[in-house]
Length: 509
Image 1 (cartoon, helix red, strand yellow):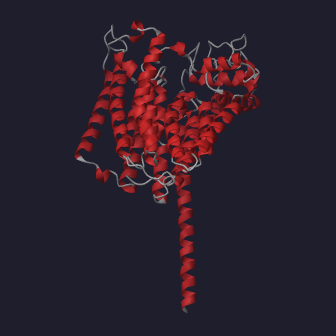
Image 2: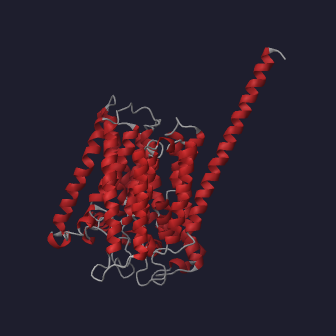
Image 3: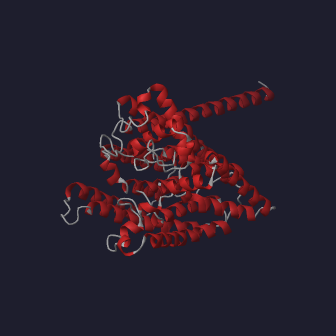
């Protein structure tokens, strides 16, 4: 064999090896997605929120009721009280994209069985077939939006990582227990708004800023809580624009994009100022109070000692929470605007959303999922703290999940997540090899603390004058942990050095 034939044979052999490697990696990605989907389907076999508990039922009934309302009533009536749309019974309180999604699901449900979404008569309808359909809509939404967003993030942003490490990180992000338990157990569609937000994150990190702006606006118009990310997006895009050759034109283009996207989403409701005002009134319900139930934020924790709602008027509480939220997110936002960087943007997303969760007005327990998403994206650069936060965020929702009858899938999802994470971090990322003595002590403290909280939940009987002691204990301890994480994540962001924003690859820490 001459040299030319030898080179040709080697080239052919290398090509075959590359093709085979790509095939195996594609199979691994499919396997990861399949396993993540099976976990979600298994959780869906357990009860949903408010199951068989009239008269209001729970979030499951809210989503089903919205399908009923949007299918049978014209858009002009979706957000208005009427004889056919009692706003006191799970009135629509999410932005227009949620309403459009509810209409689509309602139309499909009506095709299979009109009884599932019959106007007025379907309240509390919970047949086996209708529940299977409802569960399937969340699975499909997850598969079509959140799954591709996760794999796109790992492929596009973690380009410096090997393909096997990208798949490992994708698997860990997909298995974060909090999102699975809330969407596929409790029952919501957070995977849609979070998936759109993640696609927007990928876009702006790749410098596709117009596309990123559109995607983020879509996320906002699906769920208003995506506002938690707005300061980080604004600061990152502003910082990049100011460094560009034509900052004014770039900022103007982004502004026009945002206005146009919102106009299209709100088109059916732009018939009058009153119509717009009513939608805004529904999606920002100030009258509901400072916080919901026993949420793990500062206001709930402080209320254990100081009854804020008894001392201050509601209007003043709104202003106080707004000022505190602004102060909490300002350092991170200013830092990102002055020194825009890839990793800094991810930390700013965590810091912004965590600041909103801790201090903003009208926070739900489930809102911690908005912090968990960007925290999970740090699995590549700050894996151990990202894992700690994901476990903590899930534990903070235990009282809600226990109420829904989801204690068993809660335990199974956490154990499965920990097993997968320990394997991935040790074998694929070698992160556990760098765990210091202090880190091991922190891990032990977290395990002991939250094990104690769970044991107390089952074995400690609160005194009659403190019936919610266990609930408050979870809220206060979780809140204290979140405050410590807020300090840590802000510190990590300020420790970063600015890197050129044109580089889309996220480096190893």
